[in-house]
Structure formats: C-alpha cells, structure tokens
Amino acid sequence: MHKTKQTLPHSTPINPLGYPFIELTDVDSSNNYAMQQLKSGHAGHGAAFFADHQSGGRGRRGKIWESPRGENIILSVIIDTTAFQEKSYFTFSMAMAIGVHHFFSFYAQKNISIKWPNDIYYNDRKAAGILVENIFRGLHWNYAIVGIGMNINQVQFDPAIPNPVSLKQITQNTYQPALLARDLCMYLNDAYELLSVNEKAVIEAYNKVLYLKNERATFKLNSEQITCTIQEVDKFGKLYIQHPVYDFLEFDTVQWVLPKK
Image 1 (cartoon, rainbow, N blue to C red):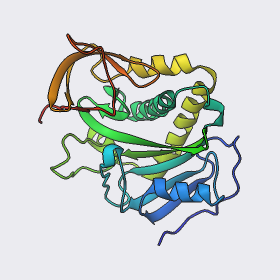
Image 2 (image 1 turned 90 degrees about the vertical axis):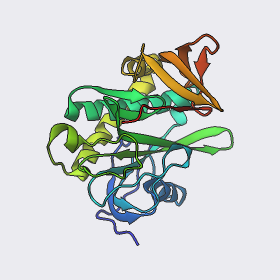
Image 3 (image 1 turned 135 degrees about the vertical axis):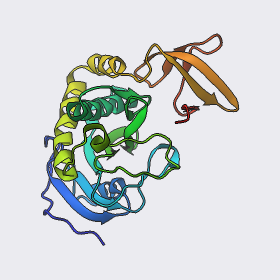
Image 4 (image 1 turned 45 degrees about the horizontal axis):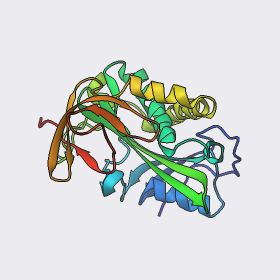
C-alpha cells in the first residue's frame, strides 16, 4: 500500500512541471504509478510523483534501479507532449537529460556530462538515469512519463553495479531528497520550455556536455566490439562517430563497453 502526503488536485496542460508534487512512501514503480494516475484521469501535465522507496524500479533495457529507502531521488513526472508532434521523440529525451544535467551540475559543480543516450555521469561514474515512456492515442503523441533515478545520499552500492556515484560522495554533504526533487522539477520545466521554442538549442546544449565527446569509446554491436571517436548526437538519437566502417551508432542496437574499475 502507498500513502500520499498531499491530495492530488486536477491538473491542466499549463501547469509547470512539479505541480502538484506528490510524495509516496512505497510503490512498485513511480513510473507505473504515474501512468495509472494519468490513465484514470486523476493526474495530468505537471504532476510529479516522488517515492521514498520502490520495489520494482525499471531502467532502460529492462534493468533494475534499486535504491535504499529515503536515500535517493525516485521521481516520475507526467508531461503533455501534444505541442511536440513535429519534433522528434529523442529531442524530448535530450531536453529532459539537459534538465537533469543542469540540476546535478548546480550541486556537484563540475565534471558532469550526459552519457548517450540519457545517463548523467560524474567523471566516469553514473549518478542518475532517465527512463522516458511515451503514450500515444492512435498516431498522436499525447504524453510522456519521465522517470528519474538519482543517487543522492547512498554511499554503499551493490558490487554488481559497475560504476555508481552519489551526490554525497562527490560533495561530502547530506541532502533531503524530496526537497531536491522539487528543485529538479524546476530544471525540467526550464528544459521543457526551451524545447517548446528552440529545438536546435536543445540539440546543441546536449552535445556540449556529451560524455567522451571527441574521445575514444568502445561499444558492443552484436558480437563485435567497436572502438571509435565520439563526435555528436543528432535529433533522432544517432551517435555519429569516427570509425573506418561505421558512420553512426543507434542506441537500441549497441551497448557501451565501460572500463573496469
């Protein structure tokens, strides 16, 4: 069972992201909960759901996002995407990554980047991940549920996780995750508004902070390992590279090969 700390009012498409802000004690997945609230008509654009704990958090490619109770940001935001019908799905994802990047950079100060397609890195370590789930009515893209998992106060991680880092490990400070999540929503809203008026600026901002840009990286494509130089990402999510065979990579067909720590 979950408990809410605030009654959810009706929201409208003009709500800024983070209004209303709902705090939950336990959910299976904050994205699942947000989806249920949207489909039942109890929530709309702007509604943000923060969870102290989730039992079935999901990342890309079916990965699990685990988090000790109350230590990190577990957040899902409902966003009306009807104004973005003529834009690509990936530039929306870019915008959300920019919002998370700018937020984390404010607190961590330096060495923060976006690892293609949408992880937030401090140096070579993962601080946050983003999962965007799009909702369609027929051919029309109506909403997205943006789920964000961010390491805030956690200092002990499962050894199976290759390269995690938390804000506390970076700054040596302890934070209140729910308060930070409210702040994060404002950064997401700024990125949402930027995409509304200037898609090109979103693409440029994303590539400006791209992890390992102009540096060597290795990916796995089927059974082949590809070492290349990263150049930039386009509006459709293609990663352009310098390589004797391949001009670009697509995120659904490759996996990063990260150095062992």
